[in-house]
Image (tube, rainbow, N blue to C red; front, side, top):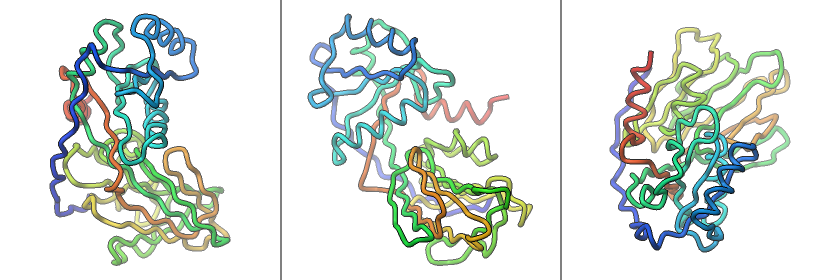
Length: 278
């Protein structure tokens, strides 16, 4: 990996949540039998505040549903999205707390707050159309056909890689570094490190290039070469843009999402343990 100067992320003071007996919780769930049954039990036990009046969203599902919930919170209030506390009713659950039905309000009130800044993707299609979207985990570029993609990568106005022949490439946030990025053999990035992971997907040329760690302030531009013969799509979480000509990616510092984790196994500890997983 190519090293980068690390710029510390400033400490953010989070507003305190109400006391457990005053906490207004909105329960949402994935469309699975297990998650729906859990929501029914919890709503019966704790009540259910409307999203417009809640202090926190309790998300029941897997990691994918948690991402959907974060985007939903962002849609409700972009300037101050509701914090999200997830409980695992899915499969992996890396971003979720353990599912327990007792003392949920107490757990939420005592939880650790983690700030997530998404990536802003601006994709320009071959026909000139521009599409903007936010990616909480990553922004990825992927070849659309059997032909490998050809990309030129520019970082802060300097061309760093004139031509990358590959299946694709991605830029991952620290929160997303353990997802698709890790599967593509990218590095796990601790929260607060102040860096983004730039990772190739099945690089063919240059074969030995394994990616880079970039300052979180970096602006990354992907230009698609030979776009007629080798079409490429760009994806920011759930938004896919096909036949792109250029993709600009930069951390969105004016948007901050808040995830809540139980103190006994906080998110930084999870990321650290993942780096030593067998």
